[in-house]
Length: 264
Image 1 (tube, rainbow, N blue to C red):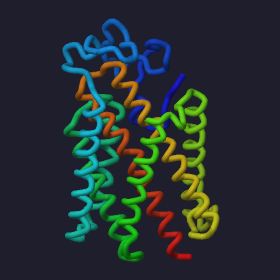
Image 2 (image 1 turned 30 degrees about the vertical axis):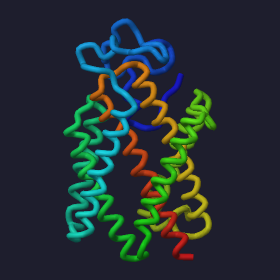
Image 3 (image 1 turned 120 degrees about the horizontal axis):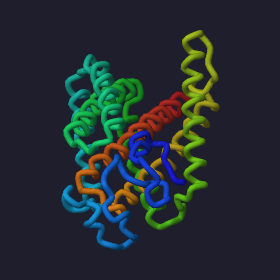
C-alpha cells in the first residue's frame, strides 16, 4: 500500500478505495470508482466541477511559491524580522488546519504561503547577512533539485513503488528523530555533532537533502494519483500545499549545508 511521508498528502486517504492505497480522498465521493489510467475522469469530479489536470497543479504551485517569494523578499527589504515569530505561529496553525480539515481551501493555502514566506525571508536575511550571496545559491539549488527530481519522475528513472515509498518514509522518520534528539540534547548543553558545522554536519545535511529530494518523488506521485482519480480542479491547491511543505524543508537544509561549506 503506497503512502507518503508528507503529512499533507498522508491525510488524503480514508477507506480502502480500489486497493491501490489511495482510496477516497478526504471522504470525497468516488461515484463509479477511480477512473482507469488514461480515461477521462469526469464522473469523479461530479458536482465538484471539471477534473484536476497537471496544468492546475503547476499553476497553483507557481502561485503559492511566488507568493512566498514575494513576502520573503519584502521581509528582507524592510527588515521586518519582528514578524518572523508570529508568522511562524500562523503558518504552523494553518498547516495543521489544512492537513486535518482535508479541504482544498485556496485562501488558507495562500495565507500559509504568505506566512511561510515571511519566516523564510527572516531566516534567509540572517544567513545572507553572515554569508553574502548564500540566499541566491540556496534558491538556485532548491529549484535545481526540484527540476532534476521532476525529470527523474517523468522519465521513470526511479519508480515510486510501495517498497521505495516505505524506504523513503522510514528514512524521513529516522532523520526527523535524529534532528529532534539533537535539539533536545542542545537544551542540556550537549549535541550529536550533526549541526556543529563540521564534517559530520555536512554529511548529515547531504543525507537529509537526499531524503527531501526523494520525498518530492512521492509528492509527484500523489499529485499524479489525484489527477488519475479525477478529483475536482480545486484539489490542485492541496497538491501545491503538499509540494511547498517539501520544498521549504529542502530549501532550509540546502541553506544550512551552504553555511557549513562556507565556514570550512
